[in-house]
Length: 278
Image (cartoon, rainbow, N blue to C red; front, top):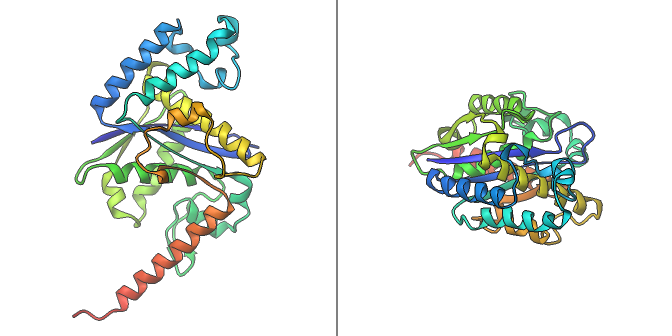
């Protein structure tokens, strides 16, 4: 059994990119992270309920602007990142999508990207073609479930005090209603919704998601998605990736590659069905 804590950034109207990211691991490892996170907050006199990553990066605002000496800003960020990275068995996962590239595809393709079942190139279930964040969201769920032990479950946690909570229920129901990836469905637990202001694990996910959002937004503006290394703070937060495929971005190139791969898998499946039994 493993637990994953996920957050979002950029799901608002008009966002150029959107990101779903967080961490997963065993419950014993999460207890270590919780202790380390609380210790970091205490060292810098930050009440847990005041932590919001968007008020910390790229510059201090809100609580951190009005109650802090700015010289503490960078050391605090580094301390939080180290608290997560030092828990070597708490592993990051994160995916983003360029919204404009997502909407450059037809509605049927967008339905496929967001979870619709397909038959002969046509969707047989609805998908969510107008919700681009469902693409990275699904990929996060799949990657975490793939790490769940055989016969075990991956349980997911989302902040009740974030707008993402309602979308999580919607996507879980959609995945469980499809006929694809039965092994993923068997390993997919149920979503839970603690308050982020009371949950260090969700605050760590908030920090990772916010940093990933800025990294993806900056590289998108420079037209260098996937071509430059993450900046040092983000690199620390994703140090314990179990595989490079646990962290990535959907632009036109990556989406096209996924379509080609899906078409090839479908072709091979049809061919295997046609083969006569020995």
